[in-house]
Length: 546
Image (cartoon, rainbow, N blue to C red; front, side, top):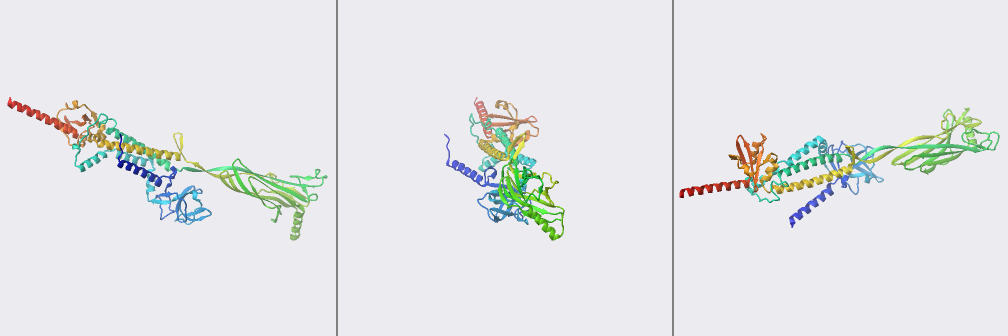
């Protein structure tokens, strides 16, 4: 039955509490945390912040003047770290400490990433250096070498020296059938290979993480939203039926004879046509302008301005032709200048604002319909094309926030998903590494043979204990490192035999066989030598008494 000590329970609880605290304090906003990590570029916040500094900001419940915050500026399409100057109508005015003018953007509280928590000078530059794949590979490779090297043996030797026990004298626990020091589950080579594989996987995950966290989670795209503005002019008048107007009506496009028509009714209709969602409103006004070739003009309002909502508006009014004629006569009488004809222009104006799909729209549409006025008639200006139905095509600029994506080998994945995957993979690799480290630590406590196999196992050639006894004259070496120095330069194999937990290692060089014995093997060899000496002594004793 497995038993848990209070010490282990407390250790596990402390580890969980530390993990939760680390998540609360340092988890990035991209994976649900409250912290954003930014690298300063430029000099707008000097002397407090300089280029290459790593800035850490935390989301807050509220922000006030004097706070240094980060926010996404939609005009510059960049993230800024600037100081709040003041609040205006629910939004903030910000400025860099070294800038002479405030920012163009006015973010609200919801658009601010967070308030400055702390900054680390030059760390951002170092991370930028690591973002280069070659640099990351060099650092990762160095870490793998350090983690999978033979440092464990040196640590164990230092520990044993402090306890006054030398490697050759370290006691060896009796191995069981399931846990032999050279067994497949706990062999030094298995742990070394596992650490190497874990290190390579960690390097790949780190490179993927650098890609994921160096890219924006959203991408701003500018999309044109087309729309068409069309309008129509109409004018008419009721007159007595006769030889000129047989149906008793003047319709749009027909000349207006001033002797027969006293008032001309007018109407202007405006339409905004689009396939996008429309949420607009505005104001429409219809006026008439009387002018001459010398530049004189006079405006006549045909009706009051009116507000409208949506994509349709209309304005109507009545043009008093007797008033127009009297105005022209008064001007001629006052100036002494008479013109053969004048121009009468219907000049509507439509001011429009609102949103078209996700785009802000602010527009003004002012088509005109021109007439030629002489002493007897009011006729349409023949030089005006599409004079009764003007139109134009426009577009609004929509800023779209699309999820950032990473593409490789024909596959596309969102940056947020890639960040979650790399974080999960990193945590999984950390757990695997900790498990391997625990297994390694447990195995290291079992004896020197494990450390030897972890470091030199790639040179081993296993031999049976009986075969090792026929190798001939032997020279014992004091350390395994010394034996390895004989084998490695010439790439000679190290013969390895094991009997009842006692390990022996042999290298043949120039007809001489060099041997290193672990502590248990040394004791076994000493016992054999003592038995042989005892047997020889008994034989000598029997010879004397024979």
